Length: 379
Image (tube, rainbow, N blue to C red; front, side):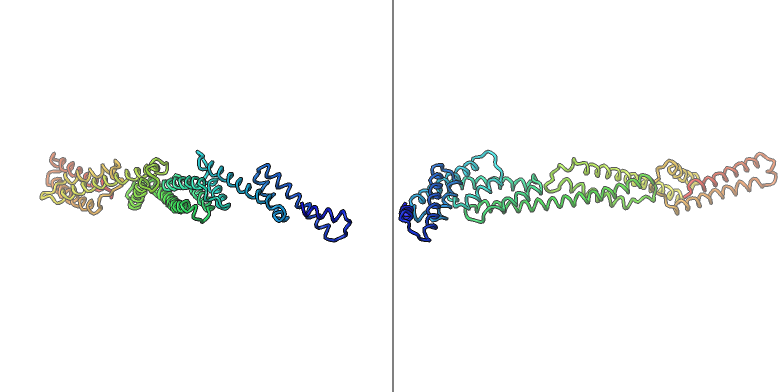
C-alpha cells in the first residue's frame, strides 16, 4: 500500500521520472500476486496455493506483505501435510493396493519431507509385508520371470534412505529370490530341452528295434537311451520348484510310455537270450554225453529250429560254433548208422531178400535225417 501510494502521488504531481513506469509495473505485479495469494488461501487448494506462493516469491511480495505471504506458506504446509496424511493413510488401510502405487506414494512423501509422519510408517509396514509375500511367491515359483522383473524394477524406485530401510532390505531379499527363480526357470528350460532330445533319440531307436526285430537291432544304444530316459523321469519327479506336477505333463507321460516300449523290447531280448542259453546247454550236454545219442542231438537241434521258425529267437542267436559242432557230431553218428545199413544192403544174397530191402529203407531214412540235420539250423 505504501508503494502504491507513493507511486500514485508521484503520478498525480506530474513527476517525470523514468523509474515511475517500472514501479507501476511492479505495483501491478505485487497487487496481482497478492490477490492470487488471497484467493488461493480462501480456496485451500494445494496446487493453486503452491503456484500463488511461488509467484509471490518471484515478484518479491514477502518484502511488502510479509504477514500475508507467511500465512499462505503456513497454510500450504498444513494442506500438504493433510494431503500426504490422507494418501498415506488410505494406502496403509487399503484392502488391495498395487506395490507400484505404494512405492510411488512413499517416494513422494519422502521427497516432500513427510517421512516423519506416523501414516508414513504404516504405509511402509504394508509395503514390507507385500514384499515379504512376493518373496515367498518367488520361492514357490508362483511368479513368472516377467512378473519378478517388473516387481524388481518397481522396487528400484524406493529411495535409498533410512525411513524406508526395512523395505529396501525386503526388496534385496526379493531380488535374491527372483534370481533363484530365474535360475530354476533356466534349469527347467534346459531340462525340457534334454527331455525332448532324449525322447526323439529314444523314439527312433524303439521304432527301429520294433521294426527290425532281429539281432542286428541297436540294443546297446537302446539300453543307453532308456537309462537316460529313466534319469530324466526320476529328475522330473524331483525337479526343484516343480513338485510332482510335472509327472502329469504330456511330455513326461510320453517319455514314460516310450521307455516302457523300450523296456519291453529289451525284456523280450533278455528272455530270448535265456532261451538261447538253455538251448546251447542242451546241445552241449547231448554232445558231451558218455553215450552220445543221435536222437538227443536231433531233438535239441529240432527244438532250436522250431523256435527260430516261431520267432522266439528273433532277438537272440544260438552260437554258430555250437550248432556246427552238434551237426558234425550228429552227422558222424548218422554216418555210422548209414554205413551199417549200406553194408547190410550190399551183403551177398541181400538184394532180393526182405532184409536187404529193409536195410535200403533204413539207409534212406538215415539220409533224410542227415539232410534234415543240415537244413534244420541254417545258422
